[in-house]
Length: 261
Image 1 (cartoon, rainbow, N blue to C red):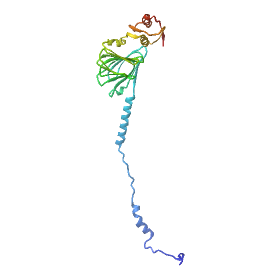
Image 2 (image 1 turned 30 degrees about the vertical axis):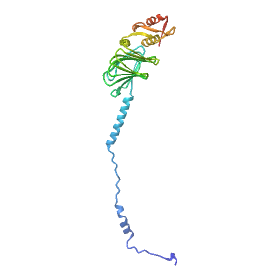
Image 3 (image 1 turned 120 degrees about the vertical axis):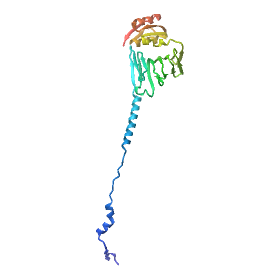
Image 4 (image 1 turned 135 degrees about the vertical axis):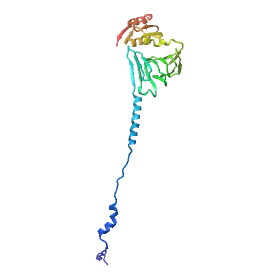
C-alpha cells in the first residue's frame, strides 16, 4: 500500500479557538511584577562619613606649617599647644598644627630655645637626633657642623645615633664629628644669650664663630688665613660687625673683609 494514497482526516470535537483558550488561558492571566531593590540611604551616609573622616585625618597628618627666621633676624612664635619658641637666625621649624592632639612633634633645622607646656611628650627632631621632654625649657643647636642640646629647666632626654642621654638643668650634650660629649654644671643661660643679642664663646672653633657672625648680621665674611683656631670671648649684636671681626681676628693676626649678600 502506498502511503501517499492514505488521507486521514482528524475528527476534532473542539475548535482551535476553544483548545487555545483552555491550554494558554492561565499564561495570559499571569502578571510579571518587576522586583524592586531597596538600598538604604543610611548606607550612603555611612560611606560618605567614613570617606570624610579618612580625608580629614589625612589632611591633619600631612598639613605642615613652616616658620623661618632669615639671616640677620630672629623669630618668636607660640605653637598650637601653647609652647613658646625663639628661632635664631637662619633657622627653620616645621610642625603639624592639626595633629597636636595626637603628637607634639616639631622638626628643627638651625637653633631654637623652647619653653614647653605641660602635656604629653614633646619631641624636637633634627636629622637623626631627637630631644624629648614633657614640660621644660631647653636650647637646641642643630646645624651641619654640630648638634647640641642644653637643659635650662626640667629634664630633657636626648636620643642620638650614638646613645641616649638624660639631661637636667645646667647640663649639655654635644655631638660633633661622631663624638658625643656631656658637660655638667655649665652656665646654661650662656647658651641662650643670643636671645638678648649677646654672643658668648668659650673655646669655640673660630670657623664656628665666623659662621655665627655671618648669620647674625646677614653678611658674607672672607678671611686672609685659615681658621684653625679656638676663640674665647663675647660681643653684643649692637656692635658694628667690622669692629667685631677686628676683635676676633686680632689674637690670630687674621684680617677679615665683609661682602654683603
